[in-house]
Figure 1 (cartoon, rainbow, N blue to C red):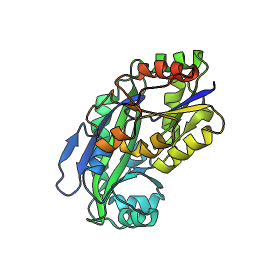
Figure 2: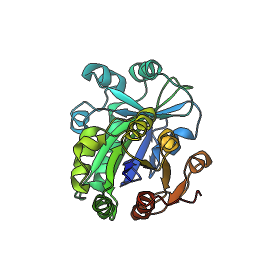
Figure 3: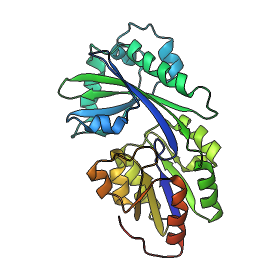
Length: 276
């Protein structure tokens, strides 16, 4: 029985610390879960900016984020949305926003870096939350993650069992590759800049190659992939407060990444699993 497991990154393989800045009130939110913040109000979309932190810090702090994106040609990806939104619509909000400044992103990056800089492996990403009702940027947001203490051992155990491991995440590929090197996951098995629909397509493609494909995720942006997988696993290792629609999409709920070993073993041996 050929088995493959696809992991999300943040909250699944990585313990992730996030901060968000409300660009209108200038109030900072710490310890937020970006997908939950996005889905808590209709019209919000979580956008990952493909920009390097150093380049952001080299930009004058009073520069409008929209002007910075236009000047530097910054690309972006839609991680998840509360409601249907098009790439063109998001682009209009990003490039015409008159509230968010580079300083709003700089303070988020600095806050996360001060918490994570001493860790041996750190994957940092920055983005924004746009709001259709505001027709612009509502929050700037930065996340920094380090692998869960038992993630490397869990991946190693899976490989010893002959289980193939993959990562499908909205994070930038270069950030994921560094994490993959630490965990022992092949570069060819990394799918970065993966939207919810791309994650689901990764699962669909792997089902043509493997007898059983397991998806492990922790956020609402993983729901399409969870539904596509042969076995869907929701991990609550970082945050146990999950929305009902996410819980309903999962066959199995775990509280520690090491539990995936038993799930894979059952799949290899063709044993039925008990749905939560």
